[in-house]
Amino acid sequence: MPDAAPLIPTPASDAGPQTPRDRVLPGALRIERLALEVAGKPLVNIERLVLDPRSVTVIMGPNGAGKSLFLRLVHGLIAPTRGWISWGEVACGEATRSTQAMVFQKPVLLRRSVAANIDFVLRRRSGTKPERRARCEELLTRVGLADRAQQPARLLSGGEQQRLALARALATRPKVLLLDEPTASLDPASVQMIEQIVLASSADQTKVIFVTHDVGQARRLAGDVAFLHHGQLVEHRPAAAFFATPSSEAAKAYLSGNIVL
Image 1 (cartoon, rainbow, N blue to C red):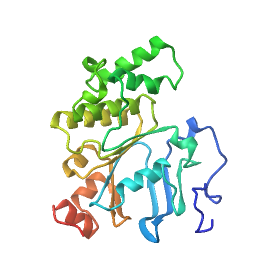
Image 2: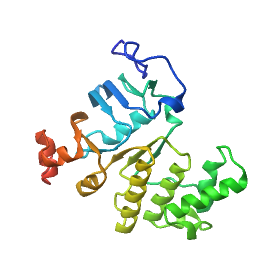
Image 3: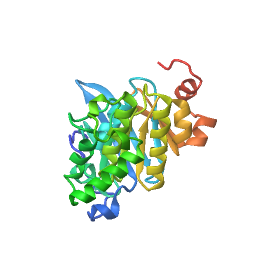
Image 4: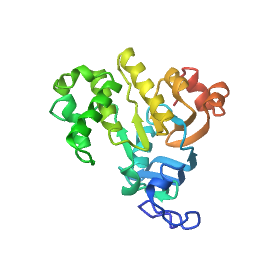
């Protein structure tokens, strides 16, 4: 594969024939020689990373480490300068993006009721109106917003808005859930509820990739941790091993609460 390739091809040497996506996704996330450069400046440079489809993967690192860019690359929102990303045997693209949902740090909500925000997503899927209503009620109950169904979404508190954004993401029944610091600056009750929803989703075999600066939260959620520094993957280990004996100096400093430059 030429280094200058701007897209994300499936590597001819490794990938088998394309099979129905519901049989191979999410599969393991496989990254090889991934790089993102802007105006000649390297922002992400990951030689190799394989993520198990069954655990909650937490992405950690100091500000500017490339964590949010990593999520956007994985979701196919931006194309890398070179390298490739695949889920199972399917190259990152429309086929994989349609099985994923992403929640950003700041929720983006529609100017309509809480329930209508959910129904907007459900109407794009199959289902009768009674089925959509039942699914909407189920999701709002799951995130603790059943009593806010008819309230304008933008009048919710910050924590409630983020829980609504998460419910809307789950409405698609994603195989992969990408979360970019979804609990930053939220009240403790909302943080706890979102963490419970994340763990329940993982137990229901949804792959979760969760970006956080909160070491305590990472300890509560992570099955494995990928630590980024200056856009590079400096270590990827099971959570217990990472927190007990981090192998990189950057991660040791970060976990000790020191400034990482």
